[in-house]
Amino acid sequence: MRRLLIVLPWLALGLAAMQLYNAYPGFPERWAIHWNAAGQANGFTDKSPLGAAFPLLMGAVMALVLEVTALWTGTMRNSTLPGQWPQRLAQATQGFVRMTS
Image (tube, rainbow, N blue to C red; front, side, top):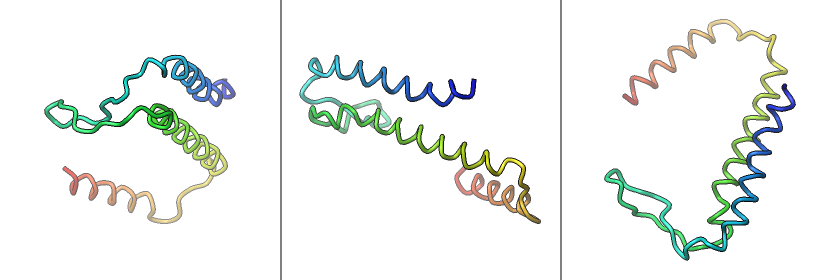
């Protein structure tokens, strides 16, 4: 099961890359990549392989970061935070929530 969870994101990205490769010739020469709060497109990009593949590249970076994080935290699974760290972390989180809300 663990191996499946490791392989699944990469399999999904690979399948999406194959679909992108097949669909790319039919893409328009220019398409919207950003919309404002009213739902109107206000950012566009020209047709390019990088522009089309950028979401897949971001997905690959996110999958890699999450996998490295899982490996790193797995090695620290039995460790505990020293002293007052849990309380300090909770206070910092509460302060951040108050500041951003």
